[in-house]
Image 1 (cartoon, rainbow, N blue to C red):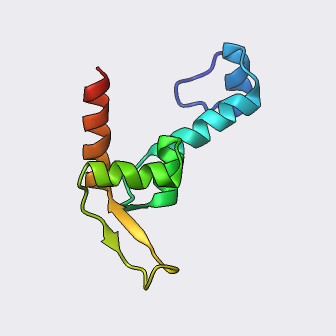
Image 2: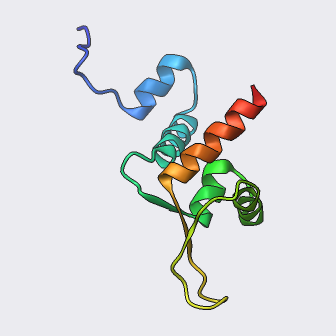
Length: 101
């Protein structure tokens, strides 16, 4: 029985096609889902640290170096909440990718 383009494969079936462990495929799919910013207008510093695989301190350094405009919705130093718009994140990522090329 042949599979149709509309058929869905399970993670374990997809992993076995390429010879990877199912857990690795699941991790990669989840990482890709987190990278998508189509429906997310703002990112927190923690989300950017996960997205860029760096520390929160490095995220702050990147934001300072790029002179990025951020939204601070926290109160005081202990309740600080910084959000960065998706457009600013895209601009920073594009600039850093071009620099490496």
